Length: 310
Image 1 (cartoon, helix red, strand yellow):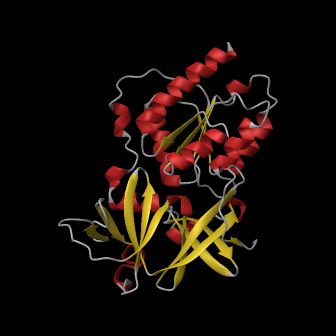
Image 2 (tube, one colour):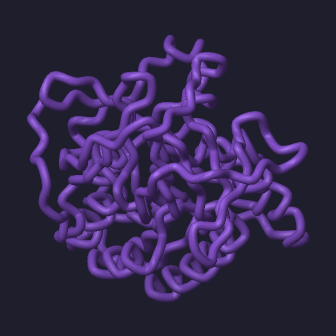
């Protein structure tokens, strides 16, 4: 694998690069996408909350905002978790939530390509999707990039995508327009697909990362009836091999594919990321877990796309 470039700021969008913050727990290296990090703080006293999840330490108020504190060592290692005097809080922002995660140390920031991120072997988690969204090697050290969305969803299921939100939209007509989904999370891909089926969309083609989705799009780009193969693309941002920003940029730079609507559906949609998505031509960007909003936007873009085709 390539050596990561230390330091610097990732300015250009759609290059298939990412920056991760390395941190340690029990001597092991882990990573989080820098986009999700708002601040690093020294660990502070926490007020316990009754009846909370065992890994939720409680709450604290660093300034004018109350934050929930998740004991990440306890989540990962259960009884082998230790609280140290030099522990840090990583303050994160994703899924429209601010959460503090306790870690033992922060090692720095590295830049690497999504091509260098490998999906963990399914045998590690007994055939089920584990807590790692990817694994990479930097300067000889293995780093596990954690799936923070999955961690929070396990702790508080109500914060994740709710299929029931679709049922509240009432009776809907069946729609056979081909929808392409690029989503590396097995759990989320299943929930998104189930939600779209409930919303009446029956023709869904799912890919595990942006590279697989792009390979498929390249194979059909010269089809005379392209809209019969793909009418809309829904993509996550964080994915091994090729991220959603790179996929979007490739689609919108291709003369045969650029008219296909692209929706970025990600936990990382904030002001800065929204601007980046617009720069590469995304038609719409929606923050997880707003699945009802996703359906509304699909309805609108499919209708608009069909008008253009006519």
